[in-house]
Length: 273
Length: 252
Image 1 (tube, each protein chain N blue to C red):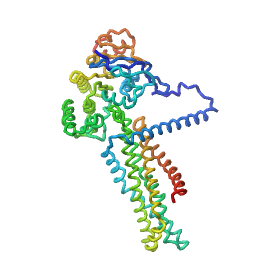
Image 2 (cartoon, rainbow over the protein chains, first blue to last red):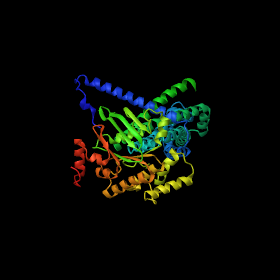
Image 3 (cartoon, each protein chain N blue to C red):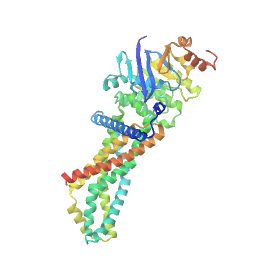
Image 4 (cartoon, rainbow over the protein chains, first blue to last red):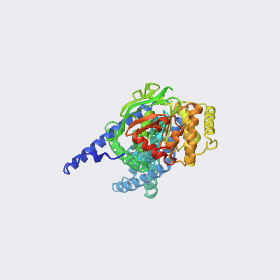
């Protein structure tokens, strides 16, 4: 399609920044509007039958099982690094045994859900966008529509449900592996008393800390799957467009999740802990 | 012959570019109707509005006298089950085998669950397109012509009343193009399916079609039988046909 800009009357150069700003605002509002329409389609499609158990299982395997190594590795590293820094800090106050509690609370409330989500955005979110984007530009999504199959119900809903279910499970794994990483560094390498490590962990980390992290992970899984599916679903301009969509999906969902994490943390600090 | 599909005063614009500016044309049941025209005149857009992949900005699409564009979504989905669409690049699902591609509309669109019945239909369609051995292959392992055939088998599996072909022979060598044209005629004759195709292959169009519409500047300028169009006085269509048949020295 030809660019319509040629037909527009030329703007005085002093007014161009204002024109560009206006165009950017209108573009952003249009994009937001389209996203919320898409979100509405996803939510409307959610309770509709048939339930596609096979597709759901495939997505859970893809997002969940195949992500175990990367989640284990990253959470072990985060637990170990955090333990290294905090043990030194606590050592100034002869409170090294508190490292178990510090690592446990921080992982359960914040680090495990956020790190898990960011790793899953990098691994699964980008591929979700690329896969749906390729289906869009090769008209596979259109083909589904011509067969009276709702592509949102067939493609997006299983990914969304799988993410909501799998993210908290992987976050739970990240908690366990992260604490293990912290234990290895604090106890085995830095000489913290193992009994003290576990005693402080047991006394200071409440079940609500873990549950709040798992709730956060579910919300983040929902956000990632919808945002990444949205960018894939509306990809255009061939392989270049799909690549750009994948980049935008990763950036938008990462930023969105960090903002959502702050909002959830604030609400939970007020009402939950 | 009864009109099965009709488009009336279809308008469609992309930004400031108006592609369709009031296209109207009836399509008769059980016939092969082609829409011809130069590249970029909106032929694909027109048939995508017929099947509902694109919504027109203005205008109406009728199926057996029922207006589709303003129908509720569920009703549109029901009506759409009467249509099949063969995409230019086949649009096979690349993560599924050929077998699963053909079974897809049976399971997802028609709601069939009987595996034996599904297998029988898939095998029958593969046999019909002359590729009984490709069921286990993935679309990436097929040639362009084979992909078109498999796309046709997938479309036929859902037993549509109307089949839309988007440039069915584009990108194929003359022999393969000929075989696809033969398949279109067979689809029409053996199953009685109404075929609507858009194409650049003017010579084949005049050979296989019962009716032809000429789309130019967003409007169907002329439509009629191939004989009627070959006697046209429309200067652009005349030039279009002269250029297309120049090699054979038929028109001019």
